[in-house]
Image 1: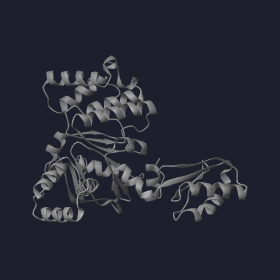
Image 2: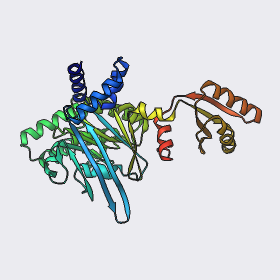
Image 3: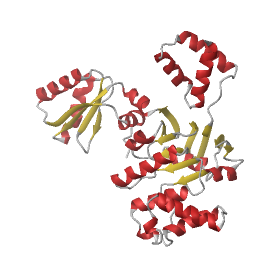
Image 4: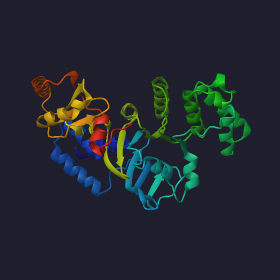
Length: 364
């Protein structure tokens, strides 16, 4: 039995599963968990199990700007071939961490590596294996799409023929071939984002850093870019994504870390984070926004958690451990108090609920 278990665990670790995920799967399969736990601990101590190869690792990263602590000991681990979502309110430290991991900033203390290269001691090697798309496009408006791409190739000191061939390949891949010889200033927002992403992929990076890549795009352009990102992961790339759109992280990320005030406050899959809410969410849409505070007070007995108010929208929500009975109780309360509502519902928790619960901020 021990040999079978060891082989199973080795394969699972190589596939990127954590020890907790392996134990959960084995428990569902009917294994005796007491024996499995004993064996896991024994093997871990003997270092017989392989470590998951990491695309990105950071340990206790600290960074200050004068008296402002941007990062207060952040640690993350990103396996190869995954989409890693980094969430947090404005000023949480997301962009600072990305800039450190891509060698654009130097941390004050702590260590970090990308594709096995130390970001401080092996910065040139790190730059050779990463691509970066920042919050603001790095496009020269007065160059054509083709010229912008070829400029990136020359910065990598590639041969002229290779530069032209790679630029043509990316223009075709990202649906920009017809606009290739137009100045970039004539491109739409979606076209500029696609060009910017193509520039980040010019050197065939192993790890792609996307810092709010769809910021400002319309929904159709955002969905199109999501598909491109999924294609990159399917081709074997690792993506570290920061975003202000929680549905984007929910749609793309395998694992999410939530940053707040420069610290990691939560980590897990989207479903694991949603489970922190603990069941359904009761949401009431009010006809009169001025009733929100009163409704929140009335809902307090329904849940152990504090009701949340969206003042401008006239929406009050609260985790509803009682499910349908909480909904019935709320309807009766509204009717008894004569409070007009336009809608009332039970829904599954979203990352927005998680984000608000963990940080006290509603993501933009």
